[in-house]
Image (cartoon, rainbow, N blue to C red; front, side):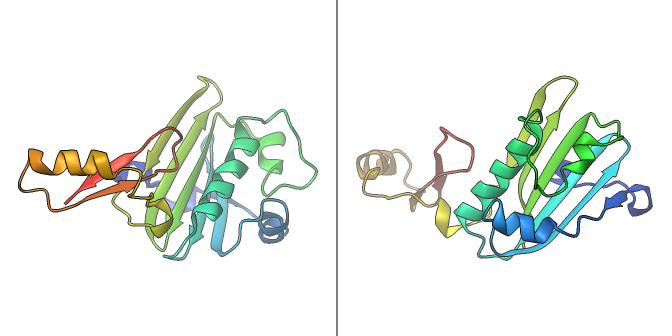
Length: 173
């Protein structure tokens, strides 16, 4: 997880001030409960950090990822009001955009898009327990009951739905 945190010196970061960002996150993307956000560029990378409390909801994370998708992957679509959009359409020579989503001070999601190679890098911290990621155990009861006898050291199995699509995670205790 350490490699996904920004270790660039603070004095090398160029912070962007968007006075309308807080309001736009709420009104345009319905991202509620955002405790803090900051945006800056360092060298040719634009970084956005979104910080929520420890009880961050799945809908807030999902909407934050939707914002990032529109900001980067659909950069040809210029919305009239979007937080920090000027940085991508301005005079900056950027080759990468990165969003980091935190729950308290713990990194929950890292997603980066490289405009030159058209590649993404995605990380989700599955060690962070979130109520909204748990799935209905009844649907998976046959699978769980068939797995329990395989190893007597397994005490329980939780089924978790990450934010990455088409993925299900099984957590063994």
